[in-house]
Length: 138
Image 1 (cartoon, rainbow, N blue to C red):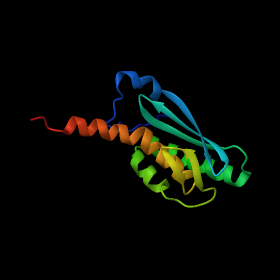
Image 2 (image 1 turned 90 degrees about the horizontal axis):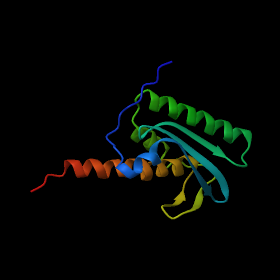
Image 3 (image 1 turned 135 degrees about the horizontal axis):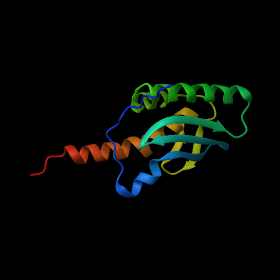
């Protein structure tokens, strides 16, 4: 089975390359509910997403697994990461509330938190690099 991966305009600086290879697991908490968001990268490009909650029932775990698998397939079939973030951002379902992460102080759902995390760790650096490349010099 061949995987198709969309090339995004983000080439991490020399020191950041190691941070964007292989899987990166981010531990988070929303209103006391612990979870783990794993992003697998290949050459600095997210190729697989996985969301796991620590003490949630089989229903929420099953739904998060299905959503993660769907997002992974979408990424592998050239759906832009921006589209996935747009779909997940501002979704509302419990748990929601304060996160304890100063960069993402409040989340309306688990998917909202994960979308904000992806946006801050992947899209914002890519946008800064693209803006720098496109800025004309006098």
